[in-house]
Image (cartoon, rainbow, N blue to C red; front, side):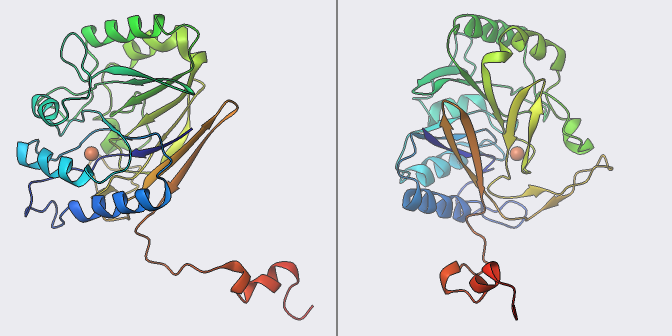
Length: 275
Ligand SMILES: [Fe+2]
């Protein structure tokens, strides 16, 4: 099973820019690249910060940009979004009984669990008692299913102070909810950090990736965030019974591409020059 992980497009209304750049062309390029090479993907998942300021025109711009994508899209709320505007523009994205953009989706490889860690007015992630109760119930009702979790904010520190101070605030509570079920959680996907990071947390493998507009420069010292225009990426995720493979693709990379069989390096690979 193949799906596409995208994150943090930070859309603005048409004609506007964010940090001097229009986010739309990168999304258009991503959609074109995904359609050209991964039409067989079951879905795309965007892990939040769909927009930068949450205006309806920004959401509509994103909806329009995603329209040509050849597969269904599932979206999460990020700290930059406005939940009610998100719901109005993605009416097919299910919500829980409290209106949070939380839901499950059964796939051939397991149950995808989409979480909502947004709290209006703060950049940090929040997982209130209502959301904790929903997740506890959802996981308990998923006995026997492999699980894949999706959220905007990472539930642990990643070693970048500027991001860690706006990570999920209820780390202990979140951990307590998933602890009884973590053996069935095959992977955790998140956004927010705008950097390619992978590893494991309490035995759960995880990955995240660069956003589609601005990035966060690797700074493990300063509290103040440094942004960058490192290239955007999307991930192609391959899931089989015995593996989860996450390919990070810099789809706008301008470097030359060439076939190895027509390269002068081919012989070198077999036999060093002069041998
Ligand atoms: Fe973001």
